[in-house]
Length: 350
Image (cartoon, rainbow, N blue to C red; front, side, top):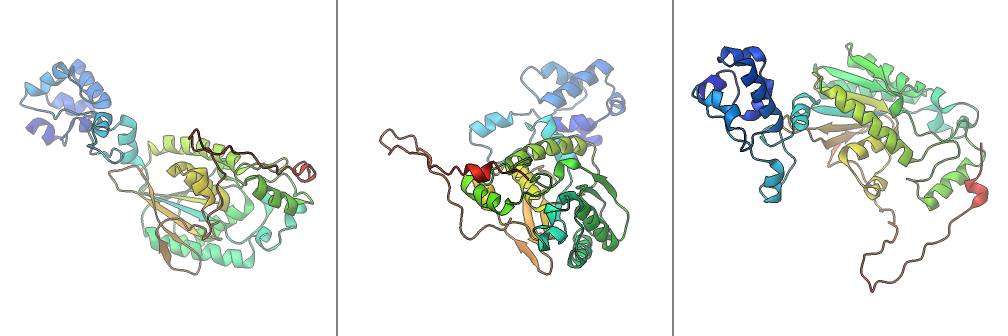
């Protein structure tokens, strides 16, 4: 249809990108314009003939949209909708057009706490500095990041902890240009209390027995608590992406919290999360997407001093033992929970 094709609209989904002036140039009045914009938001149905008639009268034949869910139920679709799917939701279409094409997560460089596990008994965790080796790792992370994104525009989000801000400063030295940076408290490290408890080693052992994802340190957090934080962070991130024009988003944070954010973003299960290897200092985790699909996948990881490793996140050689769960069969053996309670450890305070 020449009038719509002349302004770049090939499908009903394209109508939402047109402004009033574009429709007025086609000879439509404001009521007709608003009705067509409603069609673009909701998708076409059998009741939309009168909304389309103004265009048909001008020689246009907009393609009717079919529901993505109906095609999914019919077995005609085996993937998430993309911007080329006329039945895709408005939100999904907007995310496809505005989300960054690449997400880069970077764990901080080696810190004082990585080489002296007892320092957090006397120094607050958020005040720990990078070591000399950590500074070198941060500078190298900047080199790798520059090699990865070249001269493309990028935005940075950093945890406010000293070691992550110092890592960002090192990266910026090698990055070679200014970039938009903001701090976000939601991506701070998992909290283990204020100053570490005297029996912190016992608490970590107890966490393994209890189930590390759900174990909450006294006056601190569990990874499940961090998951809630990650959910809030991603909700605000999605809203910000509606107005995004940068192809790259870089996050400078902490090992466990980065994995929890990726877990939430990619909808991994708890068992899948527990199979993941911890991130190395200044390791890059690079997620990318097709321009037509908002869904990200892990392209590769890139550790300091190593080549890029493709195939997704690294996983543990030995998978953690999953707890037994009744399979629903009436004749299955009755399961009995094992006692692991250690009150003198679980109730310890810093």
